[in-house]
Length: 233
Image 1 (cartoon, rainbow, N blue to C red):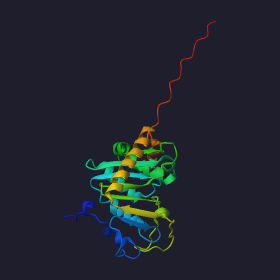
Image 2: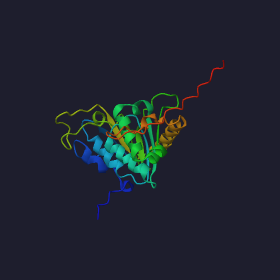
Image 3: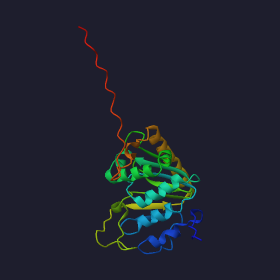
């Protein structure tokens, strides 16, 4: 039988200490808040660990959405009718080359799931939607300056340690928290931001599936040529 994935219902922040540079927390570390650092801690693995264990609900607003591993987990949630999934993305970022390709593949994979759970837009005052966080299963929240990208999360070429060829990392932080009041208020804010983007129309222009090599798109028939009028003599 396949090994059961640990549930977030039994999650504690101590589950993430192995992803830090030190491999453990201080003895006086908080039980409901911890701050991780890109380039020092394995932030990508932390996000993947959390998202892969979602079984109940996912509320997310992400500015930079350029990570195929994390996108796969969001689509897994969107396709599972037992998981309440609300994902909001920024309109300007969704039009970039790689993000547009990721979103196009999502639509090609399951257009109904994508269009039911994802919304692309702006803030209520038509600025960028710059939130970079989410609430998972109503128990764990995360937020910070970390965009979902190789340099945003840090590229761990050597497993567990920063470094190696082509290593790059921005100065970013990721806070993970379990405080019930913060979780409740953040969930309400994420829903409000999603409704704003939805009311703007969702801006799903970035969701057209990319052309597959060797496969021709159907060509629409040419418009009917209007009948020529006969000149009366």
